[in-house]
Image 1 (cartoon, rainbow over the protein chains, first blue to last red):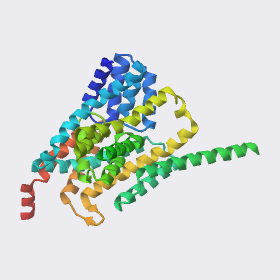
Image 2 (cartoon, helix red, strand yellow):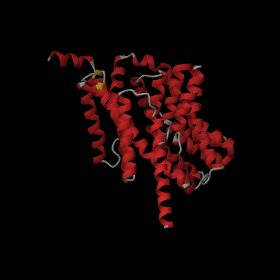
Image 3 (tube, rainbow over the protein chains, first blue to last red):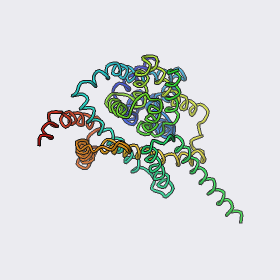
Image 4 (tube, rainbow over the protein chains, first blue to last red):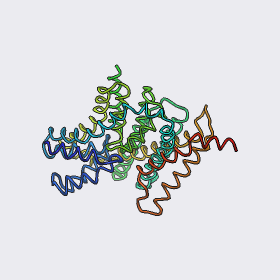
Length: 188
Length: 196
């Protein structure tokens, strides 16, 4: 149990750049070195992680922990992976405000602001590359893009959650309709 | 009350944050702005800090917001709230819902959600860049220096990938932008600029 906690603590401490960056070290340690889970398990958890909400690292830690030691293992691994960032950010939060009053630091952060915009754009571009280029997903993507842009520009009080649920509804509706017409076709 | 708000706000983020960290940013932005916990400026700073420190970006942001609003206990609650849904959902999938993901209807709904999230992230990225350079409706600014910075960083970041397979990492880009920012925004330089 302690081993689970410490392993995930280490993974949490040494992976920069968020969830996707964590998949490789988790695979390396939990599959190759410690044999806690198999390659197939790892594939399966990646698929679940991509289709369910929440940080991917948490999904993986919970999965591995549960496989190894049940609920208690899941708790230990999840705690382990969260702990380093919690402590580091908590410390940073205590002095960031004072730090920002230094002109040089403020200027540096002004520069960083432009980088963050580019990183977010880049994340979207990568996802578009991997996306299936079919009319329906493309149409949903463009609608969501246009609506979200309008929401941002005019500060409308519409949550992006509404957009996501609407997209899920439209897609599900389209699927059901398609199935019904297909079934109708068989009948005649 | 602030504790309850923090918990509920980040629970919402944890439940609806599909698509990894960048998928969650539009939603986190929405939540922190609506409660008035951070402004746009501070949020972009924190995204950069989260990207440059270890750990999941969502967890980092939750910890920071919680701590800045309500100290240690706030940080603890916000972090717990953002982690809890992912934890519970994975356990559910392992224990009871083993085949739910293969269900055709679940697949159909997810297939609609994925492109929608991409659109939302794309819009957020475009809006942030535009907001930096030309301001928003109601308060237009023409920030030549930021325009310059965005151009240079964009060319370096996307260009480096043409030369090398992986290009420079996000962490390197942030470090570079910090150095460039110190030079470009330095008041000495702007003095020269205006003197001309």
